[in-house]
Image (cartoon, rainbow, N blue to C red; front, side, top):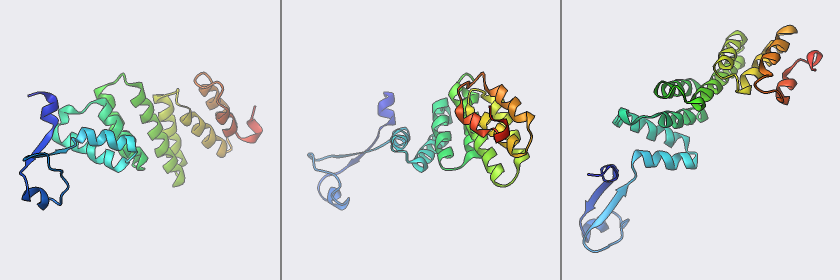
Length: 194
């Protein structure tokens, strides 16, 4: 049996009274009615296109539960994106890490992992835990130095602490990756702005 047929869920429904018992949702095409339900992969793709993050999360988890061997880096990427959009940054971070274990060379997953570290750092900052936030920002910067968010956050936190030299050093570390990053310049404390 072909893979396409195996993924297809087909239900045969008898004619006449059975069709009307189903509420008339199926049109008569002779004596047999065919009902096709989308596969979890089709549901995931449609939900992702519609930006229905809860449905993406549900469909991806269904795929993982039913056939863990089918999981590839893209499935974990889609699940992690949905979790991040739903505000579940710790779950998204772990999901991107799971995808990286499958495909360690996937730069997009590595960068997304760094962005989730920044989001977790922002949550720590909101709770007043600036040391924890700074540690997460530095971890993100180490993981994906080409992603500007972590550099900006490090410079901002150090500047808010009133430390004059560290923000300049952090900005200098960021320069090779994002030399024209105006937003990084704006994070510098006013006395340090170059």
